[in-house]
Length: 253
Image 1 (cartoon, rainbow, N blue to C red):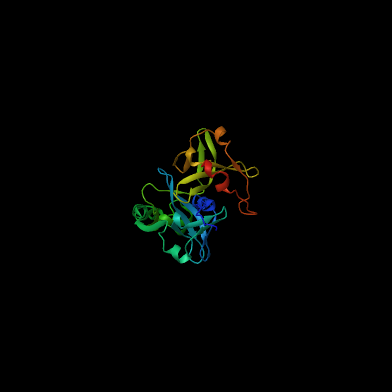
Image 2 (image 1 turned 90 degrees about the horizontal axis):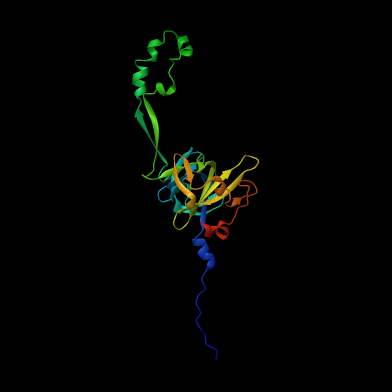
């Protein structure tokens, strides 16, 4: 008579890898929602002291203009260098916190220059076109529209024009971040260097970052050391091929 013996349930390795997966956040990536295309990634919100990524800024284009919204990082389901998939609809996105708040302030220049300034020097219509005293648009508006980032203290908005500095000078241009799905910690930094004909993209672990300020990433090493890191070759927006970060280099991050 055969007896049934209980055996330990094997660990589901693919599940573990999925739990430890990395999100790749690269600028100009298209953001896809539950109903299709929503917008485009424009900024990444980071807390430099803790290296935690809290939001991505998605620009919604189309009939509603170019409004930007703060999408919490935990809305992201998966990413590729081309696409960022988020668990929400366009309507849901429009209900989220806007990236910038706009408000009007009194234009002090209006009172000083428009009331007492340039108009006193204009005698004829020709003077309006020929004189340096002709007012600029901001001088003829009694109120000015101002935009303010809707961020918490300690948060920093990273855009695609940020540069990466080694200890001995400019290393390259920031190209994207790798972020842990579980902890939302910054795990890797993608940097593009070289000219148009010979561009190289390298991946650096977050531990080489010294600080993020003055619209720059400052790294802890010199160029010679940093250029020995893994080089990535790919065509981002054409016949897309990209590395499986989880299998190749996750353990090193």
